[in-house]
Image (cartoon, rainbow, N blue to C red):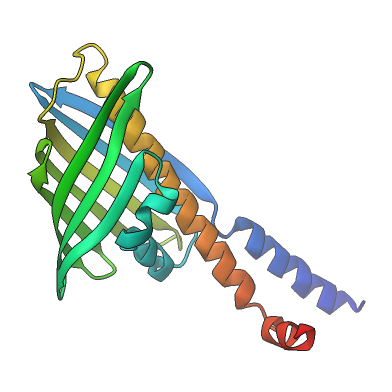
Amino acid sequence: MKPHIRAVLMMLCGALCVRGFASTQQIETDGHGEAISVTATAEMLVDPHTAWKVITDYDRLAEFIPSMRSSRVVRRDADRLLIEQTGEFSFLFFRQPVEVKLAVVESPERSVAARAVGGNLREMDGRYTLERLPSGFVRLSYSGRLVPDFPIPPVIGKMVVRNVVANQFRAMVREIERRDAQASRHSLPGANARSATAI
């Protein structure tokens, strides 16, 4: 193999290995009275469009988000949606089914804001935000505040919510990275030609 071809292949391999790597993930929880607030961030070297498609893939969220049993779009009017979701808050011995109707407002490729308008969360406001960084990474941020309409043991309340949100946020990041890596493989030069040959 010629040296310049080997160099190109090594650079390509290096780019594919780095692509999709989540450099940082931070999750914080706080509580004030009955309200529990959560913030989470991750920085990934992915296509922002892929990240947007994942966080707005409402009808398939339950396929890759733990503790979520169902998610479906009930109504869509341009960038405004009504979504129904069911799931469970669980931590150690604590189990609590959750049902929520969310009024969602999209700002395409930038943010998704959701507010509870029904279900057994008395209050819930959440927002996903996507930001392109000068480094080439994409920062995914989540901030949420909720007041359950069911009792949560006070000693473990924040831990319950943090555990659920942390697992769901990490699953969202993994799915973004997975789809981005898949899209990268399909876009490699000669990929279509190899598929056609195989057929």
